[in-house]
Image (cartoon, rainbow, N blue to C red; front, top):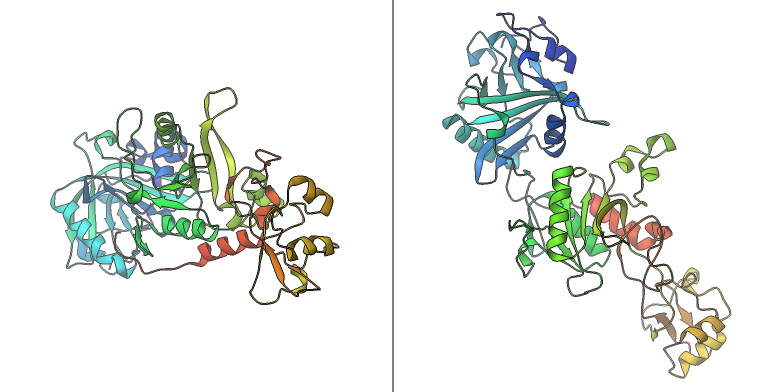
Length: 450
């Protein structure tokens, strides 16, 4: 193996752009800083996966996103045998910035599929868009290397995909828009396209939010332009007042994706939530909840967030951020039932004088109107789903039969006064905390993909 060259600095955006090959040509003549180019920013912010594939030809690689911290500059002298043994991506500046990309960063369960895609792409000499990324906070910092041609795959010499800079005038616009290459995962009756979508399903289940996944949504969804739209989830599908679409992204959506969700809403008049974030941590979800300067951890800055596309007060279609998942553990106190389970903990017993309430329950009166609730002190702020009332006479135990429903809420109370709505404090309820913890740590067997 040829040791890395030190003839130029490839460890920073500026260093890479300043590199020159042996003909005196600088990388900056064809490459561009991602942060300084709006089109590059949109593309590479949206496509955070290491590899992307053509939606119409799944074995065709469309883009490669190379980690700059692992990039090595080599002098291969035109022979792949001089880079065998390298475990990270290599760039040969003196050989017209040729790139050698190995699949070693893929997990064992998807390594075979990745090699197959590399072979197929090289066999057809497909163009591939390449970026070298050094950092992603607060924006993507790196170099958009433009279009390369996949010229060879060295199956017996280190498993490198060899990429040669495209000099035939192939433009970036000719490269297909890739599909996100998440690793598929099966949970219960569904196979989800990505581990992220599966964990969102686990979260919805933990919050007791009914949902349908894309293949189970019984009506085909189209945008205003007539294009098909495979929405990830429909939540509350049987509830006309609370039904909504939910689209899952690993990143904050860019303008094109927001426009697509807006078009979907215009077509269906059903609110659309776009949800993103890599960590499942309970929280309000507004900007102050994600600010490291305020003492928040990095897990919170990358926590689940959402925006809602809906019709605003003036009737115009609008979108706003700051929504979050929440499951309230409160109950409204208007309907009760007998609990024949284990005796409650002392902390769950209602902390008010409840003899009169129990007398009603012992007589079989289980439903209270608003006036009686107010007179008896049965406020929704006091009663939880875990609340229990124990009769000192019959020794029977009673529990509330109706609780608040979970949804995606903003940081302020929506529909204040509606007994079914809840506020920000419920983001830290026992039920919310339990659902987020399960989704954050949930693992299943992966079932394919790259």
